[in-house]
Image 1 (tube, one colour):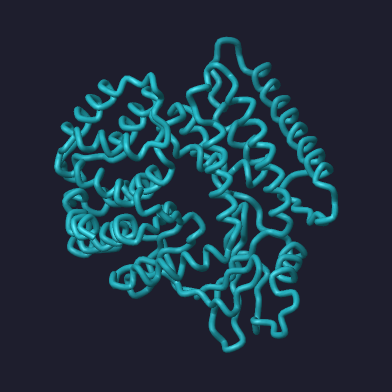
Image 2 (cartoon, one colour; image 1 turned 90 degrees about the horizontal axis):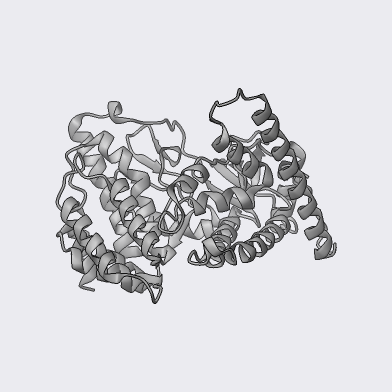
Length: 431
């Protein structure tokens, strides 16, 4: 059964039957894609290299369902643990799936508002305006006439994703025993991925994240997080303010001075999230950033927001400050203190020397000269070679910055985003 069919399954159906059905469906998907790959190999002229392996992997994982897609997307960020070629392949996966049918949307709405005395909408348009593997977004009008956007979770996902994550954990247990994978914490990675996916299923948590982000970024006039309507939300339905007139934006939309101001507003907002609030939006890519008619940047979707533990937040602040000041030995010690696994046979002297050299080469560069992606790639390479496994919460702030880096350089190549962090970093570390 393809996950796009989204059959709602009775809660009384034995779990063993769920597992058997999903195992059979996964095996069938594997055989189907394996057959296609074999046919492509047969049809390809002798000696010609394959160019569609990555595409085939993406199509295969996408057909397996949302748990596998989300897992692949999250695993692609762990370049400290997985080889770059795997991260690159997994990182190309996107939630480009067809929207729910009207019947599925009606089922989801019924589940969300069953037992409610009052229907919260005057009008609800069942044509989705956005579609993802977890939820679809619809336009609606509240009873008082307020225009709203409703993020509606697909029906039947909890049961299916729970089974799929159990199967992933079982597979990870097998992979962990392979000699080549014994130094890779596969089980721990799947546990972390599973927790993140389950969080994305919980639209109540996303509602809370939206509210927290809106409050935290209130002091940044160029940034806007839509308000949500908690009284109109339901189980699997997140009701938010509809922001009209949104459009994609690029550097050409602003003057040079406006671009400089905008970049600094976004950077300082991100620094506030990471170093002060410890609530990190890890998905600030152009698909979630829009320009509204009055020139403000609107941040949509808080499904991938991570709360940093207090000690990790402080460690990351220490790392970033020391990196900005060119203090390589201190950076190395922070990474080791933040790691969740340091093998007893790791060559820590070589690891420290590698980080010292990396920081020395990159400290104090402008955005036009400094690239976070190569810096992070080299850092992750050092960790992977030594077997030092970073805590995932330590990786997520880097992920948030990496997503923003391309836009920052497009808008203002002269901004020194290391120096721009200092006014936020110092007070945060002195708390």
